[in-house]
Image 1 (cartoon, rainbow, N blue to C red):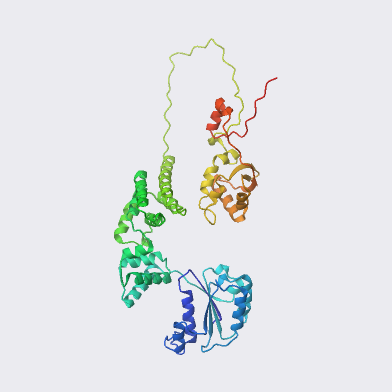
Image 2 (cartoon, helix red, strand yellow):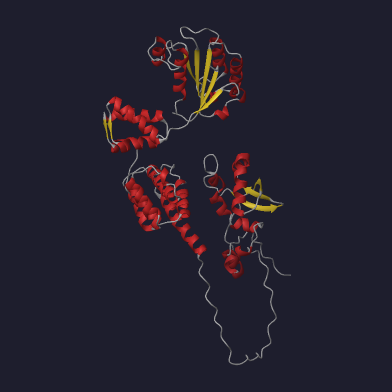
Length: 495
């Protein structure tokens, strides 16, 4: 036996339960080929949670150096009854750095009767010096079929009658966590008794199971904006949870994506549902399904206003993006120019040809099609597209909100893009290395070349209409092409 074990893996995959089984295995009075008998005094005491020599510690609430010092003192005492004292420390990554260093001394020179089981969901946060002194075992989520099999076993032993579809739903929403699945089953039994139906599970989980999910998915595939908007508004009018509706819609669109990609084997639905998904997937392209999953998966309904607007915008943007891609792939050919053959040479005009006139210079924006990617005018013309592309970036997915209406591109010099912020708060926020890196990466993606970001603070310009805009056709044309009036110079009298 090793003196220290590290059990890593997602929550609910049996790390601490395995620690208790290990404690029984090393302390059982009558083991059979290493397996605990579950009948001796020690096994029964551990099963009932009254074994003094099996100590469970929650590191999330006992993470300081004082608690670890107390552990170091008590570990020197011999076991009361059992052969080994087993310490099961859950969420060990939560221990502070100082406490971890203090605990390291015990791991280096442990008493011969002490075994440590360290459980964590985030092994990368544990000190490398502690990791190197443990035998590591990685726990993984169970497959849905394995969870259903275990739940069936529990139901048979506890005389619980539950619909197969209800078991499949429990296994699906708990995403491979057997503990969560068993806890949910226990709650269902406490609430509904020993006979459980699918709609009861849906009600407890807040799942609508609404047929309008498939209806909306069909409108998305058919690119029918009008019908899709009606479906979304009917869901909102009926008081359904729009966030849950969107989650279920994204799951259904994901199934369409998987089937379209030829991975139908991983889609966990009935044969009838699979045939329906196949028929719908055959009506659209893989690229369009990718766009749909991205847009509806990125819908933000956290505001609590219960407005269907985010879903409506996702639908319209999805359909319009498909229309734009179609136009780019099949552009409309230009109309042929008319060729008129003159009957005789044109007569020369008696009037002399006017001298070519040079138009008066004006501060106008270049035509977008002629701008180069290194030109600040081009950056400004596409700045709104860049800000929209930042949606979903950052730890909270809100970098686009920080950049929107808070800054503007100023200059480009030697590959450095200078951006002016109207407030120091936004400037400091974006200058954080983890966010600055995300902005620079997105700049490269949107504009096709790398830029180093430099942040500064500026005063917000006041854009007001001037008499020049009203009087000068040249300025009007420039404004229509995207130019902005920065300053209106006052008129001076000619001398």
